[in-house]
Image (cartoon, rainbow, N blue to C red):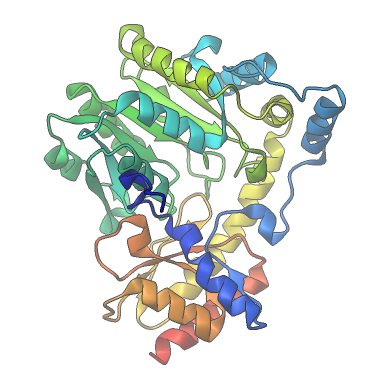
Length: 394
């Protein structure tokens, strides 16, 4: 029998893991409303036709071989212009295209964190960070998000959690799974904290154009020219193309601080050859000509946000902080339960709605779950009605 590496034993990914049970329910002949995964295309959303044409033309032009390891030049130049619009000071040599933002995060963690070291990660937070921590045999070091403060990061808790093996801090803004939008004040406090303790900031900004209620979005790297920050982005969410895996990372900060990390990541990027080649040709038209598409997507999601927020808060025994960005809500189950994974599986079997348990995002108490509000408005209304029935009959 093959003995697999121990580092794989603790690898979990709750968003996909619950699908295993959903597949069983589907085989029984039931239709499932998948509110578990942030894939816009599942719900009929499509990227702009011009981006599809750009990728198709690249394939016809035989851009089917290996790309430069750092990325297609025109894509990197477009990303730099986008960074400048956001207020980030960088240069083309400090931009690397990646196989989705997830690969960028993976490469930076590999380059920065040794076994036994740690980075501060949000709780609740995106499961990728926990999975990578396990894979790298690093130590988990979670800081809390404050539900009583619109799910803003608890900077005081960060300060308590730091130790001599802490290398960086992760911020996800807008946030997955809570839908929180970080205030400028919160971001500045994190930057000051990182500067004080010589930490690298991982700024996950994959949802940066999906911001509601006319709120102003602040990119972390725009607030500091000195602190080493790696900003992650991509076409997956804003431009509805997650399967293309067209992502990027932008290095910024004082050169003597950020350059060693950039060079280490570049070595890893060369070793993995390149990000998918033809899909990188969608980056320039997306960022330079289709900002209006992202704005239209934002407006659709705000309508959906209003439905899910109002409907969930009408359910007796449930409350939900109003999401300010992305397309997720993280409601609280006010009734006492001991196993939130069992709760979402029971919801699946009884109401055929697939959500994700809060502990799957690292949350310490089994009293939250995440729903995605990408579905059509009438589907969301029906889903909330069924969730209400499920809660009332428990």
